[in-house]
Length: 107
Image 1: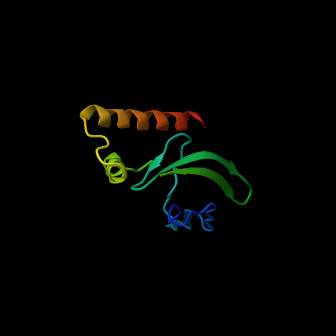
Image 2 (image 1 turned 120 degrees about the vertical axis):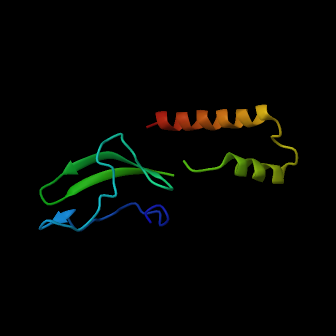
Image 3 (image 1 turned 120 degrees about the horizontal axis):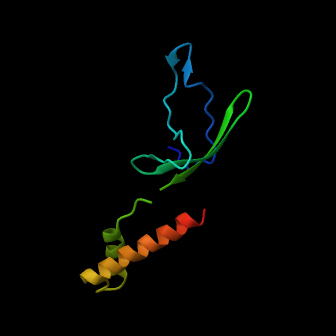
């Protein structure tokens, strides 16, 4: 829901457990640098601050899901004959890997 609505802030106004009763299931990662891997995204806990009455957590939500075959299909619609050999597909995967690696090192 957060990703679909492009939300920047989530306010949870209950505790996880109140009077021994579970009120909310944890939908965030507990450890820094350890992602919570969901179906359509990955959630990272970047920082947190425990205050007197509440906790502030900063998350990064990453959506990395794409299909190179679909991208190649779209490219072929625009330019007939693009990316036909095994070597060309391997090159596409290497480029995607390189770009994703560069994005991760920008943090």
